[in-house]
Length: 383
Image 1 (cartoon, rainbow, N blue to C red):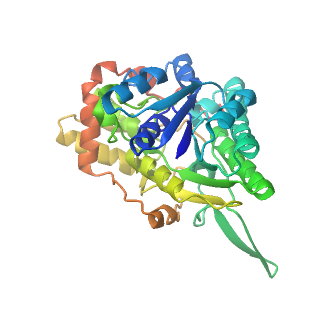
Image 2: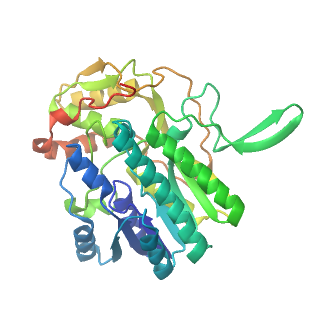
Image 3: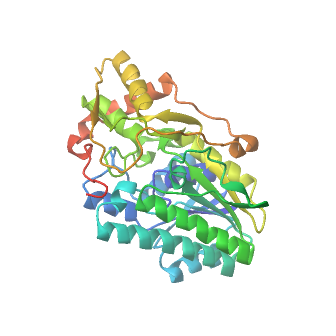
């Protein structure tokens, strides 16, 4: 089918584009390089250099013979995005086109405003492009488990049935995000739910946990096809940051007491989840919410796993607790339902010692690129 990947230059967007092209879909990627530009502005460049999107597509086609169309433009510009949708007529759109960093959104007013305007306007424009030009198109939006926060009750899969004074109803699960970035994702969900009710569009909202990893079937064809692997404090996820610290000989920096618990998944499983969602689309007039992760770990548990494997490889890994730059619970209850994707056929790739070792080996090959100054916290919540 015809598929648009918004944010196709990103850590998730680029591997998704290659996977869908390899599956035989007609793929268009759209990006305006916002994440690349912000990474440069904050001295948070990726560990491995990445060709621009046009060059990546050329390399992928040369190696695999699969074609991907490229449109460079801003999803916040409605005249641009509606022209893309009107011309391409997608059957599905995968929406990654957002400023993806919680720390960046908390630097100050300018960064908060850029996050707010980009994320909400992009989602709003995508909704209206679908309504006006391809109303049967399935919107697959990448949400985040961070929308839910860490409530002291079980987290359901998007919805909660409530009985109050003898009456019952079903509502979006209460959400309490811990950063402005995560708050924009909450607002995304509310926008989508409003327009699902009003216009009957079809939407799948994937509440994804933090992603780790460097490898997919397509990425492994050529190192030039690597995703944007960030290890810094602004764009790097905790697993990727720990891997680089282990290789660099720097202690693994655990924020606070380290009891912060989240659901994690391998990059390969992100692609699998998006594919499953696309192959079994939401019904017209349905907002389907799927909690997207495969395993639950605390920060301490992650640090211990990386330390154990790293020490076996002779890296002499240490762990160091530091003051938490974020405003968050450091020990909390965390029980989350996530059966929807498993029922669709998800086959998880778990974080085994072998997986960690292979990631460490890839980082070791790029050790000369590591800049330790990028790892320690540079952003403090509520400073």
